[in-house]
Amino acid sequence: MIQGEKLFDSKAPAFSWKARLKSFVYAWEGIVSFFRGEPNAQIHLVVTFLVLVLSVTLGVNKWEAIAVVFSIAFVWVAEMINTAIEKTIDFISVEKHPQIKLIKDVAAGAVLIASLAAVVVGLFIFIPKLLAL
Image (cartoon, rainbow, N blue to C red):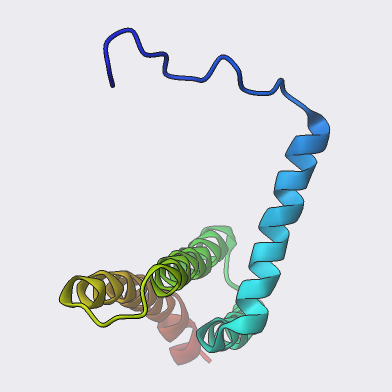
């Protein structure tokens, strides 16, 4: 930041509830587009449904439910960020470039890490409950 430069633009529009509501509408549209247009998102949605049904069926406690919900959200957020990165790069450049490949691979790797972490959480929660049946 340049000395004397303001952190926030003083010419920014004043707070508006209407503008805040619009931002939620736009965010919801992004979520809907993500789940409708991305095959991986549809897979995550099916897995989410199955995990939630299993959670209810096996009677997870409050803390286990929190861990399950946060794990699901972690995977969704990682996948959505990965999709946003991929779509942005595809919009900017159609050429193949080693840096573009690296960026996409790193973003996909983040999804893989989130997914593996969610699987580990699921194993810790569900295996003992399934063995107790």
